[in-house]
Image 1 (spheres, rainbow, N blue to C red):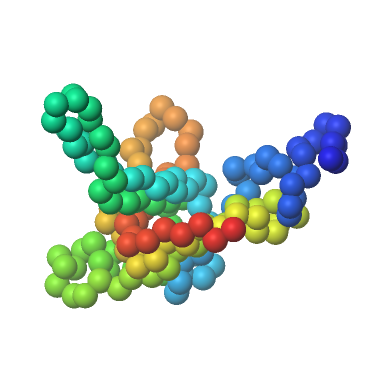
Image 2 (cartoon, rainbow, N blue to C red):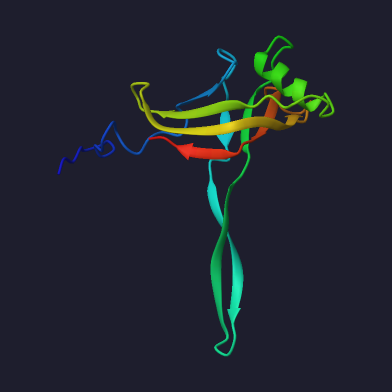
Length: 158
């Protein structure tokens, strides 16, 4: 067993634990427009249904369906030429008058060398919410936009 003093333990493709601040996001058709400060919503969950057995007063929890939450992407407010923003506005401001164009979203967690160590892909993704954070004259923060994206399937690749 290899023990490194003062650093994370060696495990496979890099030092562990991996930092949560070194990641990339890529969205099909939006190259160069996907720098985010925060990504959340990478979760799976099994919904269960309670079934009561008569006579024994036992309650079983039976698996019903697998679901995942929406992805939430946060970044600085961008200008109108943003491909990602155009995709979002095209869907959210058309009143569902056109078919929704879905995309693939990949989130990659990187090691200290910039190599992808863990990766998730959300298939058939589309925006369901576009929000601009509150403006506050008493704070010195960057103006943030938040994009919430739903998808049909989330897969952990690595």
